[in-house]
Length: 401
Image 1 (tube, rainbow, N blue to C red):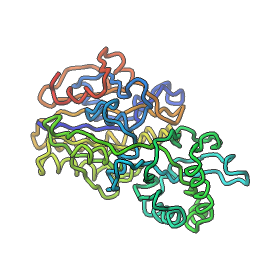
Image 2 (cartoon, one colour):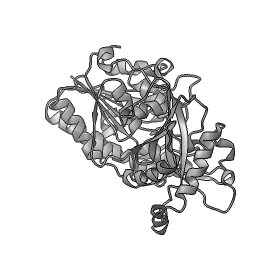
Image 3 (cartoon, rainbow, N blue to C red):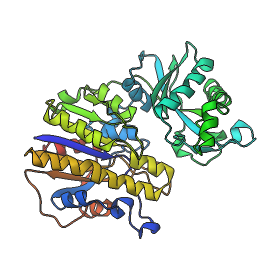
Image 4 (cartoon, helix red, strand yellow):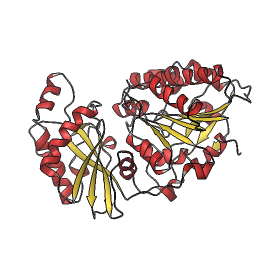
C-alpha cells in the first residue's frame, strides 16, 4: 500500500457572489476530484489549534501528524532547515520577504505594502537584490541567506522571539503600525528600501510593468526546531515534494526525503508535472511508502485576491497533479490511499489565512465507497464527519481509525 497527501495550500474559501455563490473549489472544473469524491470519505478537519495563528507552518505540521502546540517553534526556523542554514541554540531565525512597497514621496512609515511576493519574483533576480542588501547590512549579528523566490532568511545571533506581522496579512495598508518594535530590525527594513528602490534590476522590472522588489520585511521569528522522526512516529518512509522552503524544512526536520523539482517555484505556473513524476519515482522506484505533494498556487492566488487565478490553480491541481498521479498508480496496479485537502483557507475576501476548518477527501483504491457527492466545503460540512485535532488526520490516512 502506498500513501499520498495532495495538499492545495489555501485552497478552501468562502462563497463568492461572482461565482454564483460558490467557493472557488466548488466552482472550478475538477473532473478527477469529482470522480474520486464519489468513492471517498469526505469530512472536515480543524488544522489550526485553538489559540494559534493560522498559517502554513502550523497547519502543515498538523497534517503531517505533529501537534503544533508541542512541536512549533516558529516558521522561519523550519525554512532555515531547508536551505541548510547553520543555526545555534541561541540563534533566532526570521523570514525575510522581499516585498513591494509603494514609492510615492512620503516618509517610509507612510508607505503602503502592495505585494508580499514582488510579483512572484524569481529566485535568481531576488538573490541579486538580497546580495545588495547583504553587502550593506550584514554583520556578525545579522546574517542573510537566500531562499526561494521572494522568501529568504535572516539569522539574528543571540536575538529574541519578537512579535512581527506577516506581510500578507496587511496588504494595501500603511506600514507604520506594523513595523518591528525592535529598533535594529525596523532600521534595517527602512535601509533596505533605500538600497533597493533604485537598484538597476528594479528599474528594469518597472519598465517591464513588473512589481519592484524594493524592501525587506521581517516576520516569523523562532528558535531552532526539534521534530521527531516521521518514520519512527508512523512506520512510513516519507518524501516531501514542494517548491517552498517551509515544507522542505519541515521534511528535513522530520527526517523525510526532499525532492528538488526543476521549475517548481510556488507560483501559478509551476512544474506540476515534475512534482507528480518526483512523487511517483519516490513511491514506485525508490522504496518510499508516503509522498506529500504540496502545491502553493491556490494560497498565492488567494493572497493576490484573484478569483480567476485561484480557480485556475485548483483546476491545475486537479488536472495536472491528481489526474496523472491516479492514472499512473491505477495503470501500474498499485494499491494506494490518497488524502486531498487544503492546509487552511485563504479567502479571496480577506486575502490572508483564516483558522476555519477545511474539507478533506480520503480515497482508498482497495475499498472505494459508493457516495453521491462532490468534494467541496459544503459537502465536508454536510457529511457530519469532523476531525477536531488536525494532527490525528494522518492516522485516518494510514488506516488506523
